[in-house]
Amino acid sequence: MSAGRVVVYGGKGALGSACVDHFKSKNFWVGSIDLSENDKADVSVVVPRDASWEEQESSVIGKVAESLAGNKLDAVICVAGGWAGGNAKKDLAKNADLMWRQSVWSSSISAALAAQHLKDGGLLALTGAKPALEGTPGMIGYGMAKAAVHQLTRSLAGKDSGLPNDALVVSILPVTLDTPMNRKWMPKADFGSWTPLTEVAQLFNKWTLNEERPKSGALLQLITKDGVTELIAAE
Amino acid sequence: MSAGRVVVYGGKGALGSACVDHFKSKNFWVGSIDLSENDKADVSVVVPRDASWEEQESSVIGKVAESLAGNKLDAVICVAGGWAGGNAKKDLAKNADLMWRQSVWSSSISAALAAQHLKDGGLLALTGAKPALEGTPGMIGYGMAKAAVHQLTRSLAGKDSGLPNDALVVSILPVTLDTPMNRKWMPKADFGSWTPLTEVAQLFNKWTLNEERPKSGALLQLITKDGVTELIAAE
Image 1: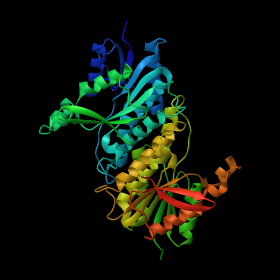
Image 2 (image 1 turned 135 degrees about the horizontal axis):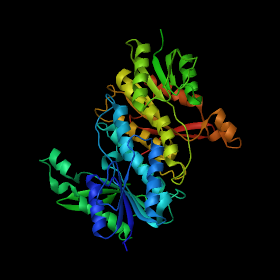
Image 3 (image 1 turned 30 degrees about the vertical axis):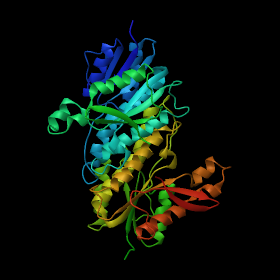
Image 4 (image 1 turned 90 degrees about the vertical axis):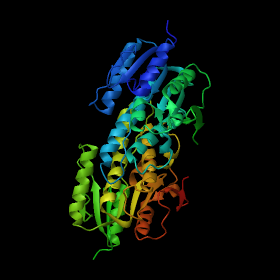
């Protein structure tokens, strides 16, 4: 018997893989949702890349429902996303469209999935971004998408949002995650100020187990200093 | 000789038509951008409805450039938008997709247009929504789209956003506009708390003429009481 059931949207990315590994090590049944399979997950739902937002939503919800066979989820964790820079002068629609698909489609589909298959009191975790709490003139599409995820988080925490009773919805707002890609591209940075992926996975695990839960609707900035990570809720 | 040149995105809608009429009455050259033509405008750019975000951006910018024949714009005013309710339980992707196209595509294309063709010190006005300053559990797609427009406004006011020097960018955040459709659907409401369209058109006109300009990046709530409208900047 498993410790519980979680799905990780973006389960093939750096942070998503770390979450899959972590929950597997804690004896959870783990589903991965991504553009390609994660062999370590109990089930991999592959998102049809060129499908519309609506089609992706219905495909993901249908496949997860099938694999759950009537069971409920303890957590839906969305760590899908991406990054693109760029201001209003060049390729704004192109960059904004990509950011929207990567961050907002995945987050809203996770919300719809939670509305259908999360248990009462379950966890829905999304991924925002600290810079998007303010204007982001050098990465306009990215900022719009993450601001939408922040607002979604607040909406879902409200009355009659469609989430199950007593569900917890939060967004983590990382600054820089300690991933192999980030180490490759920023080799001279202060790694002690980057947030380790296992740290984030452990947070999700705790909240899933109903331990040390923040307030629903919270936007939690992950501030790491000298290797120690603090959670600071944005106003 | 005209008093100046403005384009109105959403120039065929209730507020957009009022803006076209107002600027025409003040002797401006006025371009309308919408899904259908506005015969009162000097030029109507018809947006290809089924085209992608990128295609719409390049189509709109190309057609406006052609009609300007090397001249610059005094103002780009985006009042395109729409409304759909709905929470996470049903049709989230469908509603959110529609809201995104109506509010965010139009706003970001207006920003790209301003980056290319607005004069130094010109006006870019966008349209947000007061409720989206907080969570909107009963209209989740709408809230996400408007929150993105708010963040876009702040990004565009920042350094190196791609807008011309000294451009003013603001969003108006209406509560309820006094339109024929709203009167039809809410016949028993207190019309004295609704904002008249001409009031909004006059604001745009003043800001275009560099009169009583708010701070760039401001989100200006239009609060109407007993027929009098006040502008209150959101934090």
